Image (tube, rainbow, N blue to C red; front, side, top):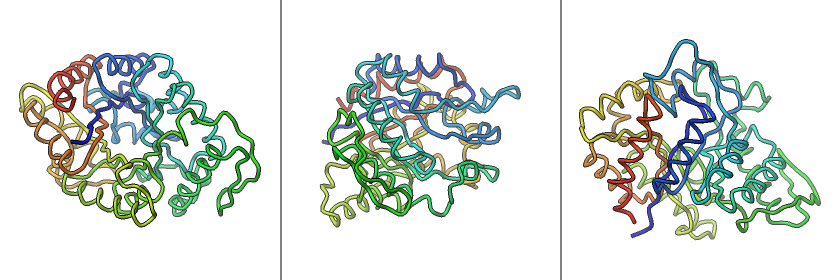
Length: 340
């Protein structure tokens, strides 16, 4: 059986975000035996998305006086690198079209050293999570060019990581003989995981990525997408077995099934009705995430593992940090040992 690993999304955004809570979640994840901690990324956020795109915390933790705080991912990774020593630290995913790839390559190489080779560099196209999303407008990035821009930016970063005098020529970025050091500690560079749940994202992974980390896919959809990744990798002369198949999953675990579902459903309903998803039936979300008693969670994890998943990035739903730590402990005691 392939090695299966587990990571925790720390609250660098959401109703419970704070420096102390980010640090506490990361340190406790390492202590409990999780394999990784993850942050997510946006530069421009909004009050609407704060209330309807909850990736950290819970619907019940929202209040009218909260600002839409979103701690920048890469600088926060540098902070967590100094607080931890074992867990991998990843971003899932950098909104790549908003990042200058030359500067991002420098930042990620530096972070790879600061983490002592524990960095995972997730990249994504970005999306309009609400009708009022303005990130692309603020940066002056054409929304309909975000796919080819991301492809070029990844290639350009790899050129910088791998070439002593780096050169790259593309439609969106070009440079010659750029001497940029240090090179990443991991060779040829930190693993690049591609976000997105479409076939386009799966094919991008097969062409360019070291991992695929989609969100809202069921086990059967994951199995199909993983095959697209593998087939594309083979078409491009790459080793499909070297590509990590990961998932981002909302989760609630409890000893009691009803208590778990009562905790999950309000936040799932809120997060399901965003502009980018607009899910009409709550069952659609329940079929694609991991909620319930220990036995229900164990069964659902096995379904994803059987579909080819080897890494879980867990986005716990929690009204307090104490509840997050309690759920993490239950995962660590009841689920993770089955895959050790």
